[in-house]
Amino acid sequence: MQRPIRVLIAKPGLDGHDRGALIIAQALRDEGMEVIYTGIRQTPEQIVASAIQEDVDLIGLSCLSGAHNELFAEVIRLLKVQGASDIPIFAGGVIPAGDIPYLKQLGIKEIFPPGSTIKDTVAFVRNLFSREG
Image (cartoon, rainbow, N blue to C red; front, side, top):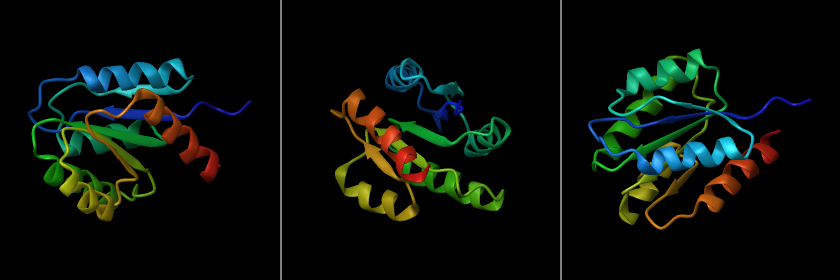
């Protein structure tokens, strides 16, 4: 039996609203994935440490505060420093369309802005691992 996909859902920065992150976490659990939710107000260092410690297959970042460019870039930088840059990242939150190309250039696999569906997020994760596996 193949082990379930392990996903870390994280809220970097000072953003205190986590409804969307919790909904995605539950949806992925409902799909049979193992989900680790780190809680709100996590530093990039905490997120990377948790991802490595939990041996996750994927990281989902959620940001509503407007600091996504800096915070996501720092998570990616720290993953590289720790030798874990092979962990793919997807992101969601209030992310302006103009920032999406920059974030994808950094290495974020997919961005789910407001209005994205749970179904689309779940399909993205499933498709990512069906192509890689």
